[in-house]
Length: 77
Image 1: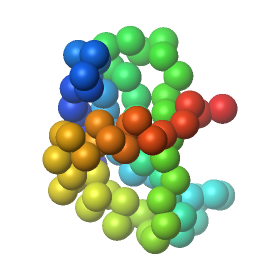
Image 2 (image 1 turned 180 degrees about the vertical axis):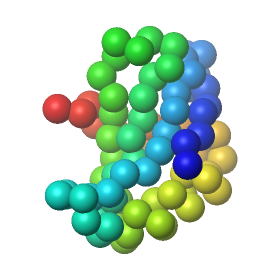
Image 3 (image 1 turned 60 degrees about the vertical axis):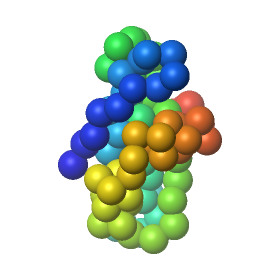
Image 4 (image 1 turned 90 degrees about the vertical axis):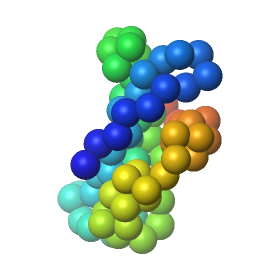
């Protein structure tokens, strides 16, 4: 499930969980896609655990927590 939120620069982002390497459930990622500027490269943050936990983290996080995760994310190569 995806969530949308706004950062301090008034950019709207979508956050969603993905599987880990090679589609395995372990070591998932949260991907951040900018909806305001779709040409901006997506950002990603790696998590420990399984994909279901990452999905729950996205769903249960406050907007401020999502902004903090976005700040700690890296540009997708």
